[in-house]
Image (cartoon, rainbow, N blue to C red; front, side, top):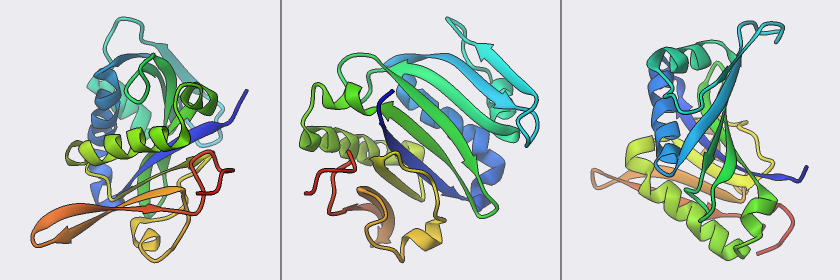
Length: 193
């Protein structure tokens, strides 16, 4: 199995009570051009008791979103062509900490780089995260190879070159703008800019 390109969407904990609403918004953006295959979630922190549900043609219900976000290690597998022109497998995992929560969207790197140069691929991801900001309303977002959510929204503003692509919303003149920071490496984690 190859490496993955990870897109992270991170939110402050003040939004924690609405985590299932945020997850549904994220999933719906991918469902615009795709469908959910299944989801898994652990009912305990140790990962001993799991629920797996195949979705098929059915829709994920509010009860399902609540189940996934209130328990542990929730993960949704879907097929979508939102980034590429051909449907590809995408995994969306829920990450929670005491200070923040987020969603880690993983795509197979080989599926993405097969048809696009790194510049084209990055442009597609940048366009997606910028145009979807008003819906997804993240406190910050990132993209990199095999990345994890490790920083709170407060910590991220003080660091440089943590991720290949970093998206930080700023309010200027009563309007939110997204600052896009590009590090010295591409999202494949190997190639220098």
